[in-house]
Image: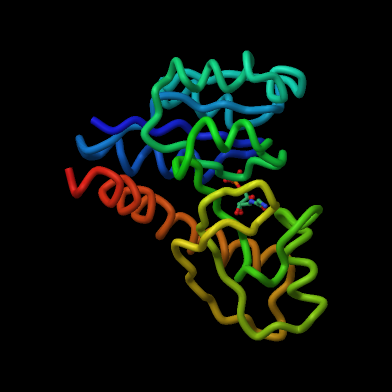
Length: 193
Ligand code: GAR
């Protein structure tokens, strides 16, 4: 059974969707959900899903003996960022080479980088009058939203779409594709085992 650890900062609807997807089979499971926000809704979801939830603060995150050690103990095959908003430090990435992936709610390289997360992305997409948006799933490197792209999917936008409806369309794509892409990455890494 492959081991997935999720890092999330907010609501955690993707975290829950990923956990549900793998709970239905026996290939992989979400063994822990970690958050940098004590009050994040994702912790309630973890509780409901009976998945251990952990909170860490900035100093634990930036100390090699902190969050990285916790992650080592959890022995993840894949670390999945799902709405996790802190930049991942270099030592962290080196500790888990090719094992950290992220989802971004736009078609990178457009609308990426510092400050581009959640509704900020959708607002910028709306303001630029884009006729489409989408999701990008990518490996994490030391720069925001710049790691190698694994998957992109698009959705069309109408002139009357607002930030909320754009977010909804993007979330639907995320729910459909993120679990499958995670499974695909795990299978690639383990020679389809
Ligand atoms: C998702 O749309 C995800 O793509 C985005 O945050 C949302 C989290 O929703 N991530 C970023 O913007 C990262 N730059 P959720 O907490 O309901 O899964």
